[in-house]
Image (cartoon, rainbow, N blue to C red; front, top):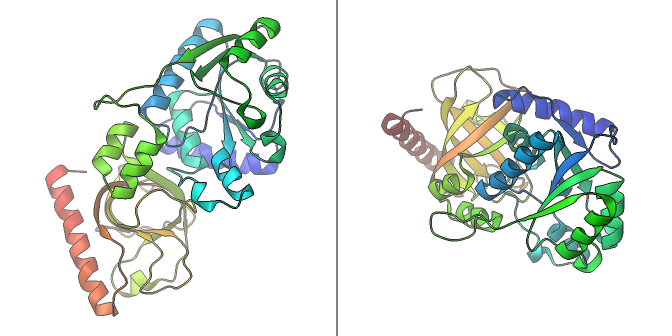
Length: 341
């Protein structure tokens, strides 16, 4: 395994412990795997958000893997193929926002029981790979696939030339079974998709996001040093980097933080570029915890964004900003007084 993979592995183990997962979990950045002889049950996709539709796919995969003594494995891509083609074609408007980064995606899959995550770099080599080569090099030689679960409209290979019919023919040749899964439908009768979650996040509709995900929306990361401005004005914050194209709406949220104590801690969070005090344009998540003083630098935390309070603003002066922050904090306290932690 490459060193970057080992670093990711260590971080994911920390994240999984926060989520109550103690099972072994392995990430591969390339195929063949180290244990290429172990046969797998495989599904393929971007899994951005690991929403309830994804969860139904993974549940089916793990069920079959247990029945047939196979390793449940997920193949995903970094960056998102649409992001790659958007960059290659100089079409940034085609690049999708990210519901979550690789750490949160991998942690969610590990929590569901996936044992192996194969993260393939989506570059010109993968984009130009023929459909036959994708089957042979990745599924057969790379993963020793014995059972494959994909969506009915799954496409792969150069110019999306491969389809499920080609997969089934290849399965008969190489000895793996292919199952197609229909879309998972939500309460409203519509297919659950990552696009739905991006739209809900863009509107700050956190209740809808939670319904689609089946859990509160969260961002995780290591606490980094900031400018200490919050400490100077009476609102010290935990600073956490987020994905560059984070799908969540910039603004202020009621927040809950895990990873610093035995139970979750309440607080208020600001996601944005801090236009009043910083002109770098760097997106940052800042969280102020209520009624506690914890040395959190370097620690891995999970920040759940529970309710959207207001958009990010550029204030004319610090006094006006302080008044707004006081109000935000009170709104968050009122939320926890009503709903509990």
